[in-house]
Length: 370
Ligand SMILES: *Cc1c(COP(=O)(O)O)cnc(C)c1O
Image (tube, rainbow, N blue to C red; front, side, top):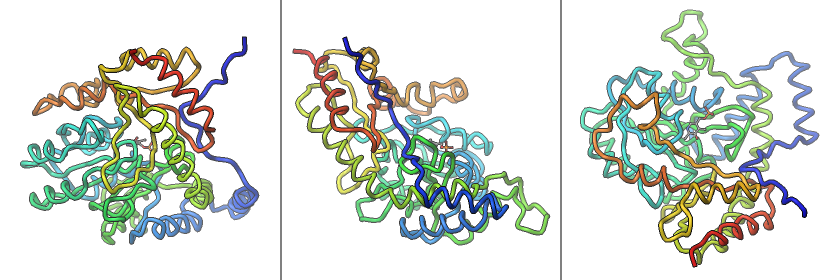
């Protein structure tokens, strides 16, 4: 009996080439190892790629979100989805702000504007998320926040390479969008984050915030952080940005293969990508409904038995996690409850081959009710 090759959930694209190794050598020789020339070059490359005026490179997305909320000088409640990664909520808590949980859409998995609308009274800000890479309904959210006169901040951790229906890149909306460059994200620098904003004043504040709140005269204006990116991370980021379009094309082809393979299985519903948008496909996720032969956890077990990794993001959702349980949601979150029980993340990374997708889909076919 031959044992099937294990398939990991993700394998970050971090291979070294000569140019990258040369630039690592140059960084070491220069003695300038953090927040220097290569960080600025990376920021400029990303700003051009996204079509946004300012990009501030930071240590990671969590730090970036914490600093954006701090620089906006907010007090009170922030509306955010419960169906998200814990770091979205943590950035709110670290600022002494109170999370107010909005529901999400069962098809797109993104924050539901109708639910947001019901929660914005007296809120200080809305913090939306491009869940698994699918752009949130930014037009509807912007209308709500404009009417309330509060900022829309976007956790774009999953969204590097995604596009809005108007053709602009994710990174160009809200007061700021914050990307993650950690190893499981579409573009990686090992660890890292990027804040994109059209607001020059905010960008300046953020550059101070990532330097402990010190604008350069050793007289800190507020309690900033060490939120800097290293030169090594920036060199890796610039190298990966050059290869990014090709990797996105590969990611999309793999997702199309999944979709074609899974199309005729009752009760297996891939995440819907909102009309006119492009997803980065940070993840390929499917909803396991009653019409399928197994429930979500049984499918995860079946995949595991075949040496195929999967994850059950985001289960439990934020409002059911220990750190958040004291905050009772103001309204029921039926879609969040459903998504957290039914969504499963399947393996996806540019280095995967078609046969791996086929093997995974065969296992899923095997669990279908007949
Ligand atoms: C990964 C992730 C973060 C945190 O990113 P880091 O760079 O690891 O700090 C924040 N929000 C969401 C939705 C994420 O998936």
